[in-house]
Length: 532
Image (cartoon, rainbow, N blue to C red):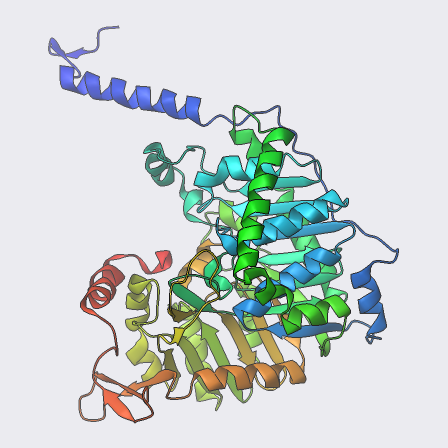
């Protein structure tokens, strides 16, 4: 066949060279991204044990009414790490963990140390992590999974691996599902106790040695609703997008490599003992209360809500029950009669949510939103997306509060870093005096339409009262600014607060420097809203 037109070559020499380069990259991509089919990927389910375990015995001692579960809010970072360690230390049969982000730092290494101890005593451990932050840690995770009782899988993985791989960018734009991430966060122990909420695994979530400390929220759960969380984990664990981390390596870490990891962890634990880092968590009152099964708990009915993993693969537009968590949560929000308080670290309300909030106000419902100020947020361009709708929300009657960047002193581990800046990371919805949602879902377009999320919907007036009081303290003028319309300049906004105990009114985003203002103003406008 003659590839010519009017006697001239169809492709010029530079064009042919470009084709060969692209083909070579494609071959390289295929060669560098193959998944080892010999790595087993068995279908496993949560353990259903009817025997005695410490956490099951604790649940039985609560004398819960039929269908009821028990809850305890986990508000501080120190409490959050202590609670996780205390549950892991009581595990007998199984530990299931599902997280968007797993850092390689002091708090996570302390968790891994306790997980290894649990595996050594015969506990089965399954860890499912999203791949967006895990690309550089394949070998570390695979070494941990060399333990016969530990298996680690990566959800929705990039096939281009390695610390520096330019093909990852090409793959990202070629495969639309890679823009959709597993943002779920939960820990289930012995199918009897659950921690679910907004925290990832890393120092910034546990008040521990980080430049930015996140103000976040989890809830500890005992009772029958825990089984629903176990089922959600199984669904993700056994999904086709969950790939064993060892399948990405050509040379498998052995138990000898694991022993080297143990040795390094033990050295680290000894260094952390020198500055009482571990003691900050082992002596924590909440952790001790969990260990002794002496904890004040609220009772109520609850159900787990979660996006199905099919959301990652779907190209359908809109919200569908049975796939999208928001399709189940929005109708619950619509039933609010008197007051709703929405807490979201990243708040970019789409048209459906804006219409719902305006309709609630029209019905006489008080609607308040607590989110980060521009100075406090760690993602300025997302704040730029939110700022597009501030005026419209305020004109519709929604009250907006933006948390200030407060100074905090974290627990030091390897070295002292002084104070940290706090940023809101919690995600919750409080509806009337009865119902609360706590989970991983921000009220933004990415969480609602792209990423998968999980959370728990709880009916408990006692828990609602406690949580409402906690967030209303954050909304006081010494911690947050209220944003409202400027009566003298239509279309302009004002910020009112009292950061130093003295009331002040400002005409632009408070405490934010030039760089953050530029990111919010420029990037926040050019990035599509559904990407935020």
